[in-house]
Amino acid sequence: MIEVRDDPAADVAELLEAAAVAGGHVVLTGGTSPQRAYELAAERAADWSRATVWFGDDRAVPPGDPHSNFGMADAALLSRLGRPPRVMRMEGERGPMEGADAYEAQVRAELGDQPGWDLLLLGLGPDSHVASLFPGRPELDERARLVVGVPEAGMEPHVPRISMTLPCINAARHIVFLVTGESKAEAVRRAFGDPPDPTSPGARVRPAAGELTVLVDRAAAP
Image (cartoon, rainbow, N blue to C red; front, side):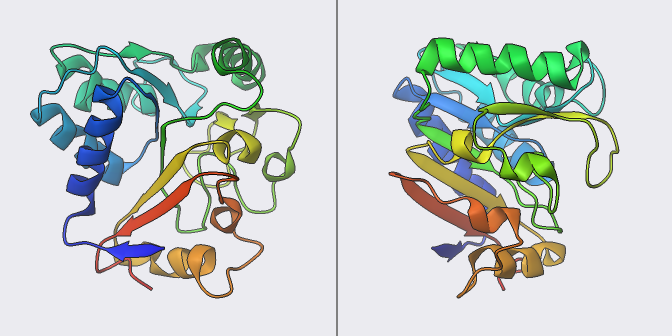
C-alpha cells in the first residue's frame, strides 16, 4: 500500500496528467506537497480540456485569499495550462454551510449519489486529518452528506472549511495520498500501519470499489 519514492510529487504529476488527458473527473487538494505536484504537472503542458477538476476541501474564504486551496491550485496549475479543464471550485465566500450545500448539489447533479471520481488526491496532516475531516470532529462520522461545512478547523489556519465526506471520498475509483516530510511519518503509520489506528481519519479512507495508492518520500516513511 505504501510506496516510498525519491520524488513522489513527480509521480503524482504523471497520474494527474494521465487522468486529465483521459477526460476524467479529478479531485485536487491543498498543501505544500501537492503544490509542487501541480507545478510539475503544469510544466508537462498536457491537454486538460476534456477533464473536470473538483476540490476535496477548501477554506471558507474568497478565491483570492492566501488561504484558498483553489487559489493555490489555480496559480500553480490551472491558470498555467494552455488547454485548461472545466473547474468546479468550492465557493468558500458563501460560508461553510451554504458553500457546502451548493457544492453537494453540484456533485449530485453531475455524478449522482455515488460520485466515481477517476482520481482523487489527498494529503495527510500530522494529526492524520484528510481533506478537512479532523480527528474527533462530527464531520468525520457524517454518512448521509457528500459535502459538509466545517465550522471549526482542527488545526491552523483556524478558519471554517468546506469538505467532502468519507462516503464521497471513498466513492473514488483511485485515491492517491501524497505525503512528504518527517513530521508526517507518525501520521502515515497511524493511517496505514498494520493494524491502522481507528481514531485516524486517514485510516478510514478506503475506497469501496477502487484503488488506494500511498506515495511518500523517505522522510515520511514510517
